[in-house]
Length: 393
Image 1 (cartoon, rainbow, N blue to C red):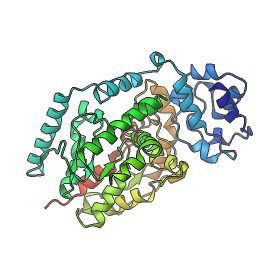
Image 2: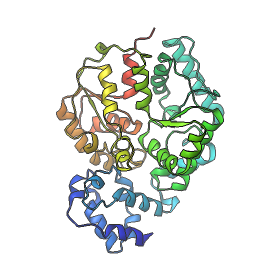
Image 3: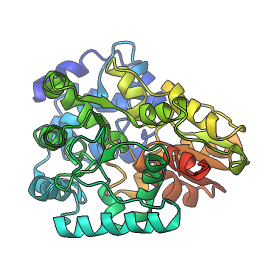
């Protein structure tokens, strides 16, 4: 493995393009060009034991700009995998152990999960969606949806945004009762064996429940980890059974274009901007898959009239600072540092509402960047923007 990384690094021209594109450069005196030189000179173990693999957000801006295509994202993931599991920082490896043991990162027992899901569904029925009942293990449902454990543990009301949209669009959907975690901390820790197992859980649920579509998780890392395994191991098997992978944008666009949901733009009078999650855009494009850039902007255009782009956007967008598991990691100083350029661009845009489509991006911008850089903004999921704009019959 050490020799493989050095061989990749040997393609480096030392031009510095990667360092000029990097938001995490300067942390601990390191930058991408220095990382590559250290690999060439055999300092792989020193890098593997450093903070760098865990504070680099693996956003891919360096890779798409590199004239030689040196893949620093792959290098960072490999270095993470070299770390002994008992020395993985923060709670990331504990989350991997929990999801492999009980099917979710927080170790929630099945009865607790079912209770929360049912209670939140009952609340939504009372608030605005008469007759709503959380669809759990519905065999033959069209769509399979995976909850995020952070919502179950601390923000259960956030699940209502999606459910309200599904209700308004009369969508046939379900969540599984077991192995329901959307997030892939196996990918975040460089444990690709665990990542494949987490993907297998999703595949098994789709087959058992006989759904037509699997919705890629809203956590951009979760969706990217699943997509990697789906393409490598599961796609032919699922397609043979008539099961397809779709993204959150595909679902929302379908509901709009089929006239199944109606919205009121006047509910969103403030200036809106959009933050592109790295792994819903640039990293999909880099893997030669379809990136979701224009779809997000089209969905936003259905909900509001005043929109402004950030100075760096789409393929060129800066990471928010939470990528590749950094949000769940213990290094707050790194999250603040890596998000500084994104915060600066948000402030200069004049936008009062920042919309995004990744749970980690939303939390980082709302809970870290807004506070540290004094941003006078609201931060919303793209499905929250749709849900708040809905005209319910």
